[in-house]
Image (tube, rainbow, N blue to C red; front, top):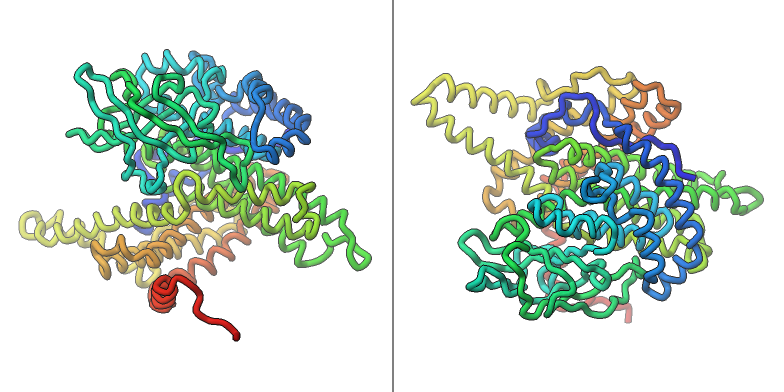
Length: 591
């Protein structure tokens, strides 16, 4: 039975600013309320459709429970099962109705992947790689002719889509792809190269391929490639640690002739196409992680109630109860952020890249913690393959690697946020010169900067959450106000200390990124809890408790990261790493 939990989406009555990024504003010390409050709610059309779909998904996948386990062991999904996914319409979830799809919002789509992930992550991956990234470029960048040609067949599942970006030696560094496309005299392109670890690679009929073009317009271009064209082939199914039954293969291109009309977007703009696809598709990954966590909480709760030790249920033991509470907090926080980001996408926000990256980092790490703790509660049973815990642990491990490793995303979050801070510093330099030409304008910029610096150093006059929060939540809001100011201060100081060299200061960037992650996730939790209170939701009291818990934990982490900007073990870390890497081994022994 599908759970009746209301899930946020689009649109919510608010003054949402489509041209602003809530996270980028945090780097300037600004809690941008217009894009954080009130918490969004599911649009009625999606709510009605999900009510019908989720129970059907549960019925279909629950009946396949034993087979799903078997297919994981055998590392494949049979064609008859994939046909069942087609029959349920799961390949057309986000495709417009005029092309045969269901036209779900990003939020509703993420909720569907949450439901499938509670049963089997490989199922979610087959569906998600198709919709989130495989054919998302066609939705975002395709012209009318391309959409008319491909979308109906993608909606029906006649064509399954795959995203071909990763190469050997070009994983997170997407700009260094070596697959090459050369322009021919007739306007077509000759494509050569190989992509690795392509999800749906062995079952796809539609590939979104990125290749070097080295044209005056840019170095990389996106192409639509049909799997049945001459010169297109794929390798055998990869033997993976987790998500084993989903198709993962190499995909090769040998003198493949790609017609000019199959360029996706503009020639030379492939990197922008790739990044927009990844940013837009991250709600699917996050929704799947949330669904997996909910199932793990159900399993662990039942296990804790049923298992007896020392004459009583282990659910009565404090350390087990602590695990259940933390799993719940992680799930609530991840869900709050994932569906806030879905709201930004569905509402047409122009820039949500940092919010999407943060939601991916947090949700992917949260489900790994949750899987670990659920297995621990199950103890010896958790280690046995006949129980579901070890599979959840294996399947979850890929999520912090998928779609940009979390290490790369942390650097991206910090550097992107610092870019606007650096821009404001450039304005200060310009304002000094402006004083002599336009004193009013010049002194205005300096005055605004001086006020911000004063609030950063004293905590007085910093940005405040103006909306009235529920009484219990006001203290949470005050903490986030303080650390928004702290984020702006340490960002400003880091740029002043390192200048252009900040890109090489990865320890510093990680701390800055982690502060921004705690701030954005915490504000999403605060907004959701406050909206539940305002709506007199029966679970509002527990939501407030979760908000207070997250704030307390986040405050400790943010304090540690702020202090770590000045007092840390970075030099010791570098010394040990240099020594071990130089030797290539651990040098100590007891004999």
